[in-house]
Image (cartoon, rainbow over all chains, first blue to last red; front, side):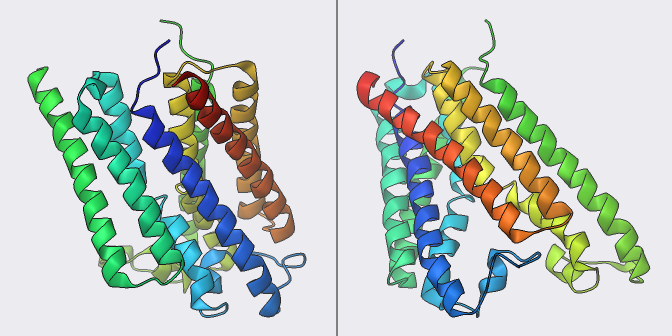
Length: 146
Length: 145
């Protein structure tokens, strides 16, 4: 079975999200220890409760991980829709989907390290334009198949 | 067309998320009424506002429901990717069902006793299942893509 070339960017972005999850956990564990939080005896509580308790730069990794479970959900939806419509023959789909994934990785690296909002915003804007392009393409396919 | 055996876990986890949604309302609405909420006058509130007026264990159901909108979204993506690449080998079907089973158990812990140590272990095991599925998908792409 020939594998659709649009699957690649999906798998890479899911893998990247798990990398961010590990990065979040790896920075959070020592910071929680420093803040005197003992998860062995804790009842209730969740990640958001750590705002203001652990250093902001520790939470930045968590912010980005959460961010990766927001907009990318519609990226996955539209890419699967394009695959199921057979739109992978168009080079634009492949470029836009890889563009989205690569820009989101850049966005993560900024948010998790320097977190300079101007750069983060530019990358988010560019990745959103890729997503918009994919969605416009899918809409075009839908309208032409009516 | 015979449906892929990987569709089962997707449908089960979506169904479970809806069960948690029902559970959150069943817990939340009476708690809000007890706190004296005038439902007819509510305007523009979010679950953060509710957290201030209801007991924490009521919010635990909400926390879990929201949690189910986070990591499982990439579970759906990777399992769908595996289906579309035709890699529904038994090991992937087992891992996907294990993810769903562990997430259901994670929900039950977070919504009831909310012992963080137990919740964390279940989350960790579920994440390992998800990581394995992702590594399988990536390796399959490298070899056949």
